[in-house]
Length: 136
Image 1 (cartoon, rainbow, N blue to C red):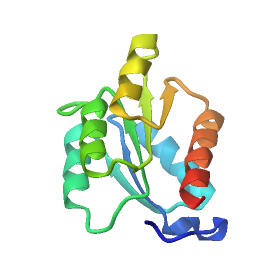
Image 2 (cartoon, rainbow, N blue to C red):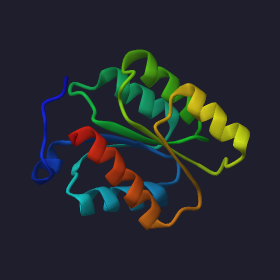
Image 3 (cartoon, one colour):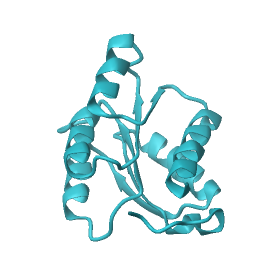
């Protein structure tokens, strides 16, 4: 069980953000900073995300991941996360908005799903929701 955290201590949260679009990484990093979250690991493709997940010295508090990335897809990253960390909150970002795609992500265990393009306020709201669940 994770230690309880209060809203003043969001800077203790550890987040992995994986996306092959550097602009998206920048936007998400800015949003996380705005929320007071500064321990952010960035991955520019699925292979980097998997490598970080396997080698991380400290446990993560949540993952934000694009679906369509080079080398390893976001759904493959999600499946790996679910095998090792079944309760780790996972937010999927994707241009894939069809019902079958959402169903596939949910079947793989995604906690939240945002279709690109998204408004910064939308992702801000989803991240706040994940953080509320983490903090209890």
